[in-house]
Image (spheres, rainbow, N blue to C red):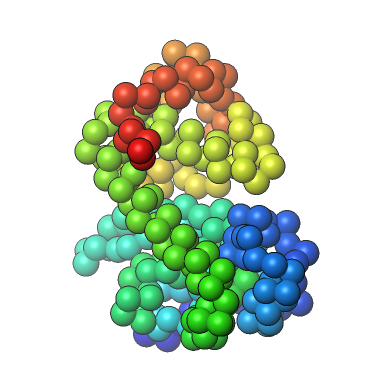
Length: 248
């Protein structure tokens, strides 16, 4: 399958050193000189319109993509066309890691809003990583983080009830947004409730009931896609016993 071309000529000059999410992305901890070398791999930033595919399952691996602005979802489709959402990505996070093992993407990546990514040609990245141990270290950390996220998702699906899953999801968004300098208590959901349900393994009506339950407990108020966390500590306490213990 050929790679989807959602870009339609919207190319921009790129510069890692001037990026607002530098401290969350692949260049984390690199020296100025090393960042300059990495920047040479990012020939252009690419705009992706809301709803457009960055890549689709079956496309060949060409690049990894660092999200610069906007947000994405990844999903897989069953034979009969049912969607399973596998993740939501925001600025500073990487897309395309699923293709490293087989050189083919195993999922689809769609923009949830008008977004922008920095494509990093994977073969060139591998070559540079061999020359820069710090870059290889960062790449390893990103891959490890994906594994940890998968473990946390399995823990959530196997150990939490529906209200706890929804609370954990909102807390995760809150923490990730806070790391990017946004409010941890007031934010807008970029995804639909059906997509949240797919990600959490819950039906739409269960998501709606969960939102009502959190509101009744005066923990969270959700109106449309606007989220207001009224009791952050209470929300954390709701899932306190369901999480994995911290590593020794």
